[in-house]
Image (tube, rainbow, N blue to C red; front, side, top):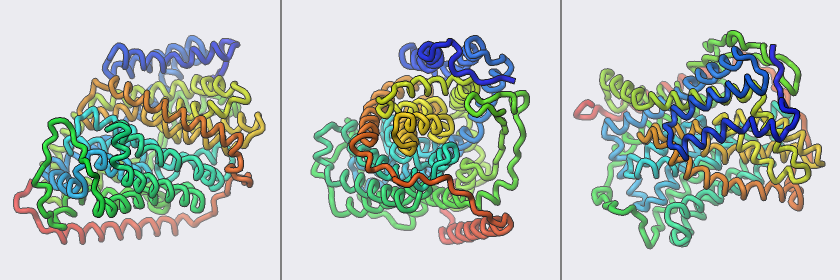
Length: 581
């Protein structure tokens, strides 16, 4: 048995300094020494094991098994999502459908900045809200490359855009986990976020345009940016305030896509922004047949339907009946929490059917039927996608290995306690804790599982609201997503620049810190003069209503059956293409 240690040196500052070493080391070897991502990840995981054993008194076998546990989790479900998304994208490229997609996007706008807003911000927000876990970065970055963006540029923009919707990602899972950990009402947390996250939603479209073309570009696109950020932020805030944490990303992204598409039909920028040597594709101006456009977009339309199905509670309940769950050998119940003083269960759940990656793979397989791709060709594309991602799996696995060692040993909590020791100034630094949590784990959900309770305790200790502590953690965690090694590895993989992760970090870290500073100041103001934004009612966590499992499974089966019928009709409507791929 091992009890987590949070201050092994008897001095919190010194203990935190040791806990920060793996993060500093990772940046050093990746950005300064330009070591390849998979080597940097493996060395960081090894260093974390050594520090956990030497300074945090964690037994060697528990440290090693923690790393292995994280490495396996990096393959499933995270790596599974990345592989599935890459397979789906490669399928559209190999069948030639992406050329039509390019033409359809260019028919809306030739301006590269507006293309980024449509794909990365609007469509990416939907993917984040429905699936999360790297899906939006994987798909949007690949789409930009297909549209002619330079690989590194596309990866950077996809990472930057995937910030505003993160807190409500995966149908609100980060908020629901925070509510579960803290005992606060998720609806009240969501009401507070209605005053925080729309600010990020307003800033990001402006920020993307500034990054691409400077302040001048903002004035050139000002009406379109206002429509984009305004539609997203307003619907996000209203949904969050009145409907809770499950649907904000979905409703906001759809509103943003519809408003942008309609607006760009009647308004065009006076100056069209293109890249150097970026020759306009004149054939994009030719009239596209609606049937061809729908066929080309069918993999992503099917993806949206599948992800929506997988997000329905009854469908998930049905699919989870085939989950294989087993305790992780050696480490299960072998670690005592330093905060609750209870043994921590370590269960690995192989929810192979209900995983988001499975929904994406099934969307790709249905797309093969619609696009008339032969099974042999589909298998070749899948194998090619696996080869493309082989080193990415190592990066993701090693980073998750470090995260699990840091979490189980207490190192990550040590960093949080150190930042929380800033007293009355703590609200100014609170978002940094969520930022660190998402950086280390790659997930705002995990960041809240780690630090949400710490945040509420710290805020209440200085006479503020625990709700604001959770809000700060969620907002900071969203901004940490773009610097997470997991996100960086995904972006590098789908754009075929594995080995250049350090360059992505140079871009992401600078902009992440700028945005974090803005949000931190805003949180500090809410703790002071703007405290009227904090919900007055401090409700307890809502008890889940009892539902007959059989009725839940029947509802899930009905949803899936309806989806199968819809896809069958979809496949029949589109007659076979003349030349099979």
